[in-house]
Picture 1: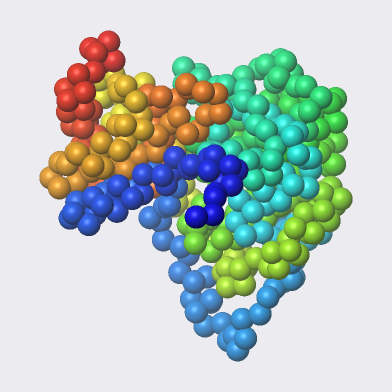
Picture 2: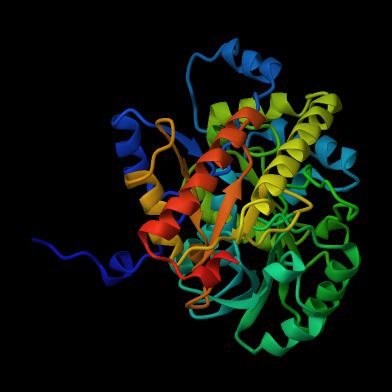
Length: 406
């Protein structure tokens, strides 16, 4: 039998989906599974945009231009202007989700063996993209005690070595929900300028900020025109994850021209997805107000329920739709699998994302999990009922030391 490459055999496994076979088996056995493992909202995609795609008169579903459909790229700056960001169509390259944009940017801006500097816990798929591009991630670790706020600029500076070519942030953050203040972004921008490196920022959750820290786009950092590369997507903004339409936004056109080479190799982003994305730009601002209010209520519900559980360490996140909590368990992977294989309450259970998969530092996150508050309040409450009982049963069955249960 032919062999599998060592690269493939050692590829990073996503903590978000790795337990899916166990969830599928639980459903096949007739159990209800509450999916808090993945950022797939149950919020309705704006119906008017979906209807526009349904009624589009398409005789031949053609390739689009590799950089994206021209009318969509020309309309996109309207969206950014409404959010206080001034860009032109020439600053935008459409990608198959933000994921493709991140991968292409790593290929375009880093050579093999070079390094990006990123706070952890970090979005787990960044690790996969880095592996595919044959580059390294060096982590600057954040802690749950501070709500995963960014460490000091001095901590980032100490981690800089000549092989570091970019600082990579997700703001608001996935998986922690932290929102990074303007003063910190400006300080990191100065560091990037001093060392002549890129500042990559994943801004797909910019609509979802609930605390006192307002969202500040890296595209508004002065003097960073050649250094900032922003990744964006319609997936979370409009609850349109399946459209697979994202964008790379940068005023560094040399970067975009280089990314376009890879975009031409994959031919084009999804045509129907771009038609939907273009129609979504006309979505009324009231949609975002309603959705933001709904997520804030879900956040508060999840935070309050988790905080009431003995032994759980939690914080109130200011953005996105995730909570990264520490549970009174011995091993998050074992616990998350046990939930799907061995636990049931009223024929229900919960699927969570094990926290260790969001770290690059070995040994970290072993008792942590990521919760995505993407379900309605009734389902969230049911999921928390399951979790509260599950923690009690798991501690008893696994004979967890009482020190975990303080």
